[in-house]
Image (tube, rainbow, N blue to C red; front, side, top):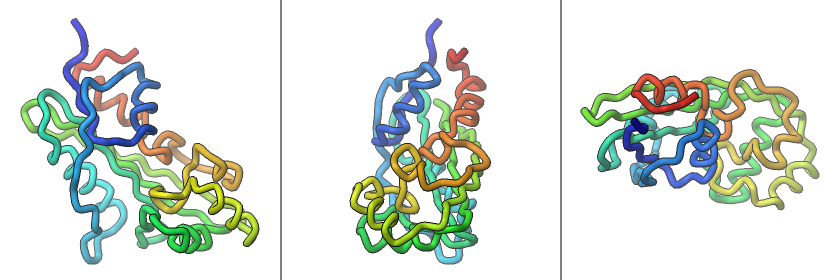
Amino acid sequence: MGSPHLTLASASPRRRELLGRLGLTPDAVSPADIDETPLPGELPRAYALRMGREKALAVDAPGHVLAGDTVVAVGRRILPKTETEAEARVCLALMSGRRHQVLSSVVLRGPDGGLRTRLSETVVHFKRLSHEEIAAYLASDEWRGKAGGYAIQGAAEGLIEWIRGSHSGVMGLPLYETRLLLKAAGFSIG
């Protein structure tokens, strides 16, 4: 007997690649189209969980729907998915020489509409970045559309002194938590 039907509620090639590391290919990909604006006073952890749930509920698909969200936070401040170089520069300068938190929620909606949720919490510490290092990273264009203005799977990894937690969670889909949810729902994962 094969695995149940799975729809990935994300257009992210990274999430699809990470899911493949578990030996799974989604039957369908249907990105959730929701308003991702944080609520007034919403804390990063609550925001990450809410976004994952809302994305899982927004996709109209049969079987199971896998959704997630990755939030980069410095203290209580939620950093944006950077769309401009100026935003990315502010984020990198803010994280320079200090640690920040990456919260990755993963939500599995079952055929009955029930939600199973997990949250990965990772601490990332950037080296103190020089103006030249920030400029070089910005020139790479890797920051575009990334939470906090960086992608750990690219050149930014060379700027990170240490991480404590899930590398795949920082990339956008925490594999340990995802595996737990999918196995509990009857998916064939070794």
